[in-house]
Image 1 (cartoon, rainbow, N blue to C red):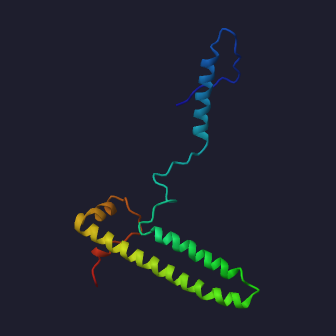
Image 2 (image 1 turned 120 degrees about the horizontal axis):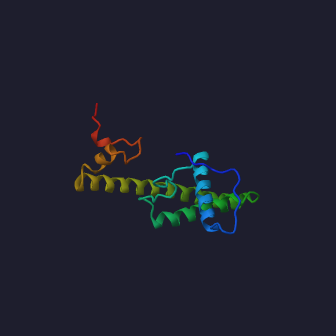
Amino acid sequence: MKTWIPHSVHLSEDMDIEKSIEEFHEIFKMVCNKTFRTKRAQKKSKAHKPIPWWTEELIIMRKRTNDLRRRYQRTGNNEELREQRKTPNFEGKARYAATIKKEKISAWKEYSNMTTFASPWNQVYKLAAGKRSKNTQITTLRKHN
Protein backbone atom coordinates (compact mmCIF):
# COMPACT_ATOMS: atom_id res chain seq x y z
CA MET A 1 0.00 0.00 0.00
CA LYS A 2 1.73 3.12 -1.21
CA THR A 3 0.49 6.49 -0.19
CA TRP A 4 1.61 9.68 -1.81
CA ILE A 5 2.81 12.22 0.72
CA PRO A 6 3.25 15.76 -0.63
CA HIS A 7 6.53 17.40 0.31
CA SER A 8 5.02 20.75 1.10
CA VAL A 9 1.40 21.43 1.87
CA HIS A 10 0.20 24.92 2.59
CA LEU A 11 -3.00 25.38 4.50
CA SER A 12 -5.38 28.05 3.45
CA GLU A 13 -8.50 29.40 5.08
CA ASP A 14 -10.85 27.49 2.81
CA MET A 15 -9.29 24.10 3.77
CA ASP A 16 -10.68 22.04 6.65
CA ILE A 17 -7.93 22.07 9.27
CA GLU A 18 -9.42 19.22 11.33
CA LYS A 19 -9.53 16.96 8.29
CA SER A 20 -5.94 17.85 7.41
CA ILE A 21 -4.80 17.06 10.95
CA GLU A 22 -6.58 13.69 10.88
CA GLU A 23 -4.99 12.82 7.53
CA PHE A 24 -1.56 13.86 8.83
CA HIS A 25 -2.10 11.77 11.97
CA GLU A 26 -3.05 8.68 9.96
CA ILE A 27 -0.05 9.07 7.64
CA PHE A 28 2.26 9.65 10.60
CA LYS A 29 0.90 6.57 12.39
CA MET A 30 1.34 4.45 9.27
CA VAL A 31 4.94 5.61 8.84
CA CYS A 32 5.72 4.85 12.49
CA ASN A 33 4.18 1.38 12.23
CA LYS A 34 6.26 0.61 9.15
CA THR A 35 9.46 2.06 10.61
CA PHE A 36 9.58 1.05 14.26
CA ARG A 37 9.33 -2.39 15.82
CA THR A 38 6.51 -2.84 18.24
CA LYS A 39 6.52 -5.32 21.08
CA ARG A 40 3.64 -7.69 21.24
CA ALA A 41 1.87 -7.87 24.56
CA GLN A 42 2.34 -11.14 26.38
CA LYS A 43 -0.74 -13.18 27.06
CA LYS A 44 0.01 -13.75 30.72
CA SER A 45 2.41 -12.03 33.01
CA LYS A 46 4.69 -14.43 34.86
CA ALA A 47 5.66 -11.89 37.47
CA HIS A 48 3.01 -12.35 40.15
CA LYS A 49 1.49 -15.77 39.97
CA PRO A 50 -0.03 -16.93 43.24
CA ILE A 51 1.75 -19.75 45.03
CA PRO A 52 -0.81 -22.40 45.98
CA TRP A 53 1.02 -23.70 49.04
CA TRP A 54 1.75 -20.27 50.60
CA THR A 55 -0.26 -19.66 53.80
CA GLU A 56 -0.76 -16.93 56.37
CA GLU A 57 1.26 -19.00 58.84
CA LEU A 58 4.23 -18.87 56.46
CA ILE A 59 3.93 -15.09 56.15
CA ILE A 60 4.10 -14.73 59.92
CA MET A 61 6.96 -17.22 60.19
CA ARG A 62 8.92 -15.40 57.45
CA LYS A 63 8.57 -12.09 59.27
CA ARG A 64 9.58 -13.68 62.58
CA THR A 65 12.57 -15.46 60.99
CA ASN A 66 13.76 -12.26 59.32
CA ASP A 67 13.39 -10.41 62.62
CA LEU A 68 15.46 -13.02 64.46
CA ARG A 69 18.12 -12.91 61.73
CA ARG A 70 18.35 -9.10 61.85
CA ARG A 71 18.65 -9.13 65.66
CA TYR A 72 21.39 -11.74 65.49
CA GLN A 73 23.31 -9.85 62.80
CA ARG A 74 23.12 -6.52 64.63
CA THR A 75 24.91 -7.84 67.72
CA GLY A 76 28.41 -7.86 66.28
CA ASN A 77 30.30 -6.35 69.23
CA ASN A 78 28.58 -8.00 72.20
CA GLU A 79 29.62 -11.69 72.13
CA GLU A 80 27.39 -12.75 75.03
CA LEU A 81 24.25 -11.24 73.47
CA ARG A 82 25.25 -12.67 70.09
CA GLU A 83 25.44 -16.20 71.54
CA GLN A 84 22.02 -15.73 73.19
CA ARG A 85 20.45 -14.72 69.86
CA LYS A 86 22.29 -17.33 67.78
CA THR A 87 20.24 -20.36 68.88
CA PRO A 88 16.76 -18.83 68.38
CA ASN A 89 17.86 -17.54 64.97
CA PHE A 90 18.97 -20.94 63.66
CA GLU A 91 16.05 -22.79 65.28
CA GLY A 92 13.55 -20.35 63.75
CA LYS A 93 15.21 -20.69 60.37
CA ALA A 94 15.05 -24.52 60.54
CA ARG A 95 11.39 -24.43 61.68
CA TYR A 96 10.52 -22.06 58.80
CA ALA A 97 12.25 -24.29 56.21
CA ALA A 98 10.53 -27.41 57.59
CA THR A 99 7.13 -25.73 57.48
CA ILE A 100 7.68 -24.66 53.85
CA LYS A 101 8.65 -28.21 52.92
CA LYS A 102 5.59 -29.63 54.71
CA GLU A 103 3.23 -27.16 52.98
CA LYS A 104 4.72 -27.92 49.55
CA ILE A 105 4.32 -31.65 50.04
CA SER A 106 0.75 -31.38 51.28
CA ALA A 107 -0.20 -29.04 48.40
CA TRP A 108 1.35 -31.43 45.88
CA LYS A 109 -0.54 -34.40 47.37
CA GLU A 110 -3.80 -32.45 47.27
CA TYR A 111 -3.18 -31.36 43.67
CA SER A 112 -2.25 -34.83 42.45
CA ASN A 113 -5.26 -36.43 44.16
CA MET A 114 -7.61 -33.81 42.75
CA THR A 115 -6.22 -34.21 39.24
CA THR A 116 -6.37 -37.99 39.27
CA PHE A 117 -9.96 -38.38 40.45
CA ALA A 118 -11.72 -35.31 39.10
CA SER A 119 -10.27 -35.12 35.61
CA PRO A 120 -7.41 -37.47 34.74
CA TRP A 121 -6.96 -36.02 31.22
CA ASN A 122 -6.86 -32.39 32.35
CA GLN A 123 -3.07 -32.05 32.50
CA VAL A 124 -2.55 -34.25 29.44
CA TYR A 125 -4.87 -32.01 27.42
CA LYS A 126 -3.13 -28.84 28.59
CA LEU A 127 0.26 -30.27 27.73
CA ALA A 128 -0.88 -31.40 24.28
CA ALA A 129 -2.54 -28.05 23.57
CA GLY A 130 0.64 -26.20 24.48
CA LYS A 131 -0.92 -24.45 27.45
CA ARG A 132 1.69 -25.71 29.90
CA SER A 133 5.32 -24.73 30.13
CA LYS A 134 7.63 -26.71 27.86
CA ASN A 135 9.79 -28.22 30.62
CA THR A 136 6.88 -29.81 32.50
CA GLN A 137 7.07 -33.56 32.75
CA ILE A 138 4.07 -35.64 33.73
CA THR A 139 5.52 -38.24 36.08
CA THR A 140 2.40 -40.42 36.19
CA LEU A 141 2.84 -41.34 32.52
CA ARG A 142 6.51 -42.23 32.75
CA LYS A 143 7.38 -45.93 32.93
CA HIS A 144 9.50 -47.30 35.78
CA ASN A 145 12.24 -48.57 33.49
